[in-house]
Length: 499
Image 1 (cartoon, rainbow, N blue to C red):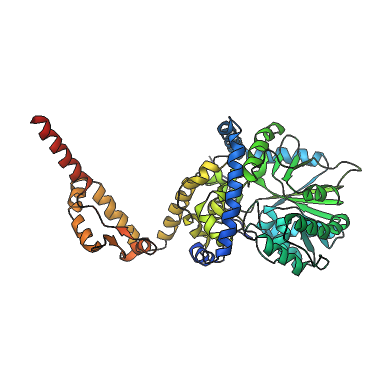
Image 2 (spheres, one colour):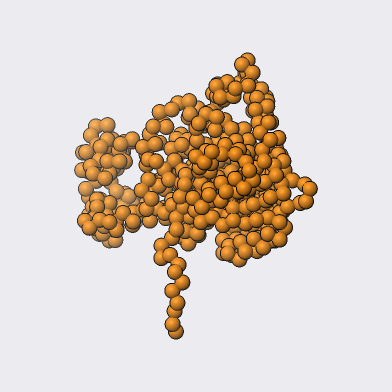
């Protein structure tokens, strides 16, 4: 049988944009750990959200069944993704919407820029969108003379402070009320100079600041939480009502969405509308849920566009052991329970996606050989709290271990001489492959006691093992091995029984 070369790339096409860290995680984390105010803000916020989530989850006796259903649905979507994307495109187009396909961040940014120019606009209002943060849309539009105004309160705070989001759901989680008041006083020209740091006054100041933008903008840009293949419908859930105004007032609506956000049908929303609000904000339901299907004459935006973004998702889908990271519904429950995130904050992860899900999603989208992202899978204690909290049961610890293995293998391929880790693993394999060899090595335990000294602590190990003792002491080994203890214990028991 003959074969025809179709010109398909031999290597995966990875993502670009704000997915790459600027420095390795250990370097960034060490710097962030020195920020006591950051740790205090994060500790208070994550514990509050975590407690709320536990209360509302406990109300549902079938919570675990809902998690199973959500996981199974997302797995089925990934198995049928090309087919469902075609079905969605057909239905979305039939109802007056226009689909644009973007392979990477550069293509997506160019498409959005051209659509804004076609609408004759030089400013846009935005609903909170992880996909547009991922592709660096705001920075790109600014370079081309287009102003983008964030309308989500937390995103507005981050934008006014020229900062970066540090949490998927609460981008300004690292700032307290006093810091936010100072930002408003500094960056909002028409704000009341007597503004206090009470939440109601801060929200009122933001509302007045954004009102003119909502009423004058010709173009709005949104993300989407879900896309329904059987009807071509998009869905956004939010808490402030700014999303509803962006989705209904402007003449042109541009949505940027990752291709993995699909659900097969309307009925699937039943599961995800229970999982998402409880896992994200600890609420039984979202205050605002907006769904739109194409164009409705005389009502809402008359030009409706959707940019379907790949940007490394096909590469992640091709990884059989890592593809379930694409099941993520961006609830952030994993971050709120992660001991590493709680201490370092989101900026240490560098990428748009922080926390445990970012530690797997970013390397999958960019490839583990991306130099700085290769450190992200190590940003975890593997305690498993993220897996227990995930509403769609993404086994994050398992994928972290998989990516660590990929990282080690990729670096080994460039070395001709075995490294310390290679030698150590070979030695451990040889030793543990035989009970006799293991027993022989255990005879050396007293040497470890001598190295520990009078305080019974080993404070410095040589070579690659020095990393272990850099931040903790190693207890002195016991006087006898478990094997020796077991033999002696049972020998004594047998002697007593015979007596």
